[in-house]
Length: 622
Image (tube, rainbow, N blue to C red; front, side, top):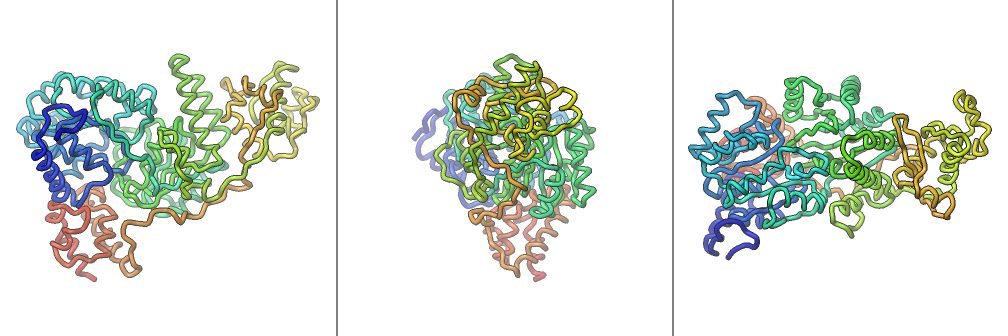
């Protein structure tokens, strides 16, 4: 039997069956799982068989097993190309805890450390070797790889190859050399974030034309998506954390370094332990903050959207955005860092008019040609459409990634608290008329704040200075509140019925504005809430893997304390010892022997030997 579109030497049916059995044995013995999930088994079999693959799987879907298991079954060393240098040590620690021989090569190492890893690779003493993409541009690296036996190449975060994408890395453009230098070594490119266009670009730039594509659902049903109107965002964030995620680990994204610093300080002042993370910090401080976040429970990290932060922490319970992401891809990737363990989590964002103005301004001032700016505008338009939808946010999100016709999820804010819509045609005409009259009659352009003050009939110094109280449109908008008018402006911008230009964010009309002013185009709008309501937790939210009886909760807490002490002693993140899901199952089943403990999901042979006695001691304290 051969698999379609494979690269390398086909195997016989008996060999494939034997390799399948070997994969199952590795899955159980090393990783402690009884079965593969979703497409994992098919992907693993295809790669073991020598085939190239493009794997799209959501964060937390188990992408790493798709190359780790084949690397342990095939002869040689699995070479993993990853841009997340700051995480390589933790990835290697996690594999070492499983008994896997793993190492990495990147710029953070001393020469002696690199030489040791290189010698292990050449001697075949590694199962997996992690490389930063820029190292493959060095001839010394390709010479090193030529001296060893390579089981496969895994290209992680493959969307980084897309020049139109949100996380482009120029070094990824050089990775087609892998196929040229090692044509018989299978390659597996993996990502959690790729539209159809990005998939095509990955295939083209990585020379994966003959690969099989495995596209899992992008849905993360355990994540509740919520977007609220922005009004004193720091206070909104504090209320959100205190009322829903007190004591939980979380990530807060801000657009600027200054906002990151201020937000982290604000949270600490109000009793929420938080650390900043951005490119302007000293490297040692940034590394220490990330290390704390990975190792401590209940810590919040505040980070810039612009600076990519790889996070492998499974128990992040919320991701919050205080500023609008530039694209749906970026939003999906960042929110996907919540709930990697499959437990209920929240993706929460506040969004307002200033976000739209700011993002439009960034696009106008961006480097690149007109085509590049148009692409940025399309990314922003899709993000605004997600923010302004009156339908299910999850269905719109999935449709963006090529999964249309989904039923409403019942676990997002627009499903839990359906927004009201209203006929905003007259309001839109009033606002657009004000912009038009200022331009035609006075040759003037102003930002949203001044336009709204004219509509509300406010005789403030600026209005009086320019005699705008004499305009026919002065005071014609008193039927709406200031916040409602800001919502009208925001939604007209999102719909392309209004534009913003220049450093001062002045409002201007678009060609589509005339359709509203003169051609009878209707403008349905979302009604701005008096105050953002907090949706109740959805009944459809997935339950935890193992429901704990009240009597078992204290045992679970004791197991977590034991895990924390063990992780601290070994200098690794707590999840490297055991995930929460594994501890929950232990607390519920209370195994009385090593054999019974070994039957728990997530406990392979190495972890059983390393931690089994300690777990049984905790259980014996009952």
